[in-house]
Image (cartoon, rainbow, N blue to C red; front, side, top):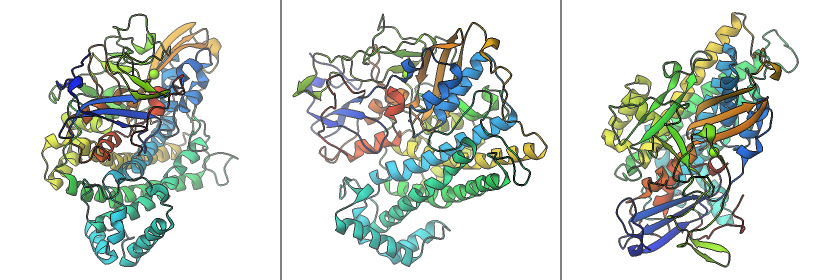
Length: 596
Ligand code: NFE
Ligand code: MG
């Protein structure tokens, strides 16, 4: 049997199958199978989530006020965003309003996550696709210092500082214990930075590692801990007391001052380290314009960060919302999560079962019934999957579609929408960055565009942290200390039956939870998460998902070391824990042709 891929390649004719499994420096279990032609250009891509956890089923029959604590355990990386989505879903279902302070604190929590997640992604999950750590060993610390000082006023930039970093790195290498720098494709021909830029980036990798534990203290102040801070239906679970010693356990002025100082330090780190590094590194790779393709031209965002409490309409959301299809930037479609015609999930290529798999289900009517089977073209040897059959079921991700279209979600989607809407907060920094790199708008639709949008968004989020902190303080000083509304807390006040939806823009993109409540308990709960959109398998029409589309037509310098594949996949910051919400019955850890 032959299969024609979306770009017209017949798989029987395909040359080698390259398998990357597991893909590392992501969250969860992702397998990618590729077909490359004689010139080592990717002609077919198959994205597979090899894990499923059944959180949607665990929620059935539970108290809806507890759902946030379960859904939050979907993932410790985008920690809190599922909890926020969940409390919004329950509030939407039951008509619960939250106080202004709760809205400000929730926004601070969510923006803190954005800044933390983007920083960690850039340095610890993505940078080593562009930065050759071993090359840094031959850098001249003095020249590195000159380079760093030419890019930024960041104070950690003396020749002695970089000399110490180089010595530390040399000790790592000589000990044979490379720690986080183990298993890179060091020396790969697709690396382009000079040794000094590599050394500077390694120094900042280590600094960011240290700083990430500072920024999350904001979660600890308002939510008690990180990961998995506490949330509350009807508001936030912290009390605030501004008088001197304050009430025991309350957030007091000393804690609030700590939050304020962390916001300042985060802003400085993003502006003086992250963005200059991003621009410097991008400058060496700006002709590496792969990773867009069919993917980034259809984009979706729900919007987030409500300015005033309880208004989730697009005009009150500071992050953009909408849908753009096939790169038509002049037509922005409004998105309605309650419209069964808009969002549907399909399982024809997913390890789940529906009554009629030609049809999709809106999440309010969603079904999560696991069903693992391999198609006839798959190859299994010694209980290990050698090759999957993408004409059959091949992933634990469902395939969400917006009006039938596969969509990309995430920072790039948000920036394309903000740009197309002419929103100056998104358009102006995008234009400035393109000018600085001397690149046309079209360059946005790429792996590099995705990575750049994340950096810009990190800066935007840091600015909005300050905005909501100041707003919170002004309200507190005006005498309003209220953080929770418990008027509809008792189930006796709820209707016998109700349904609702809550949404956020998680760091990786549009996230929503749909819930049905019957007789005070959860009757159905469905999460459609960012990586379900981006890592989606094919749908009944054969349309591929964003990871698959973004990988097509990329040339590999060396298929045994598929660095280019990691670049593009990592630019989405995949989270399979979120998107598959168990391993295969066979124990299912698939093959490991290449492990990176
Ligand atoms: Ni686990 Fe998540 C985010 C959500 S999924 S990381 O951001 O929601 O893609
Ligand atoms: Mg789901």
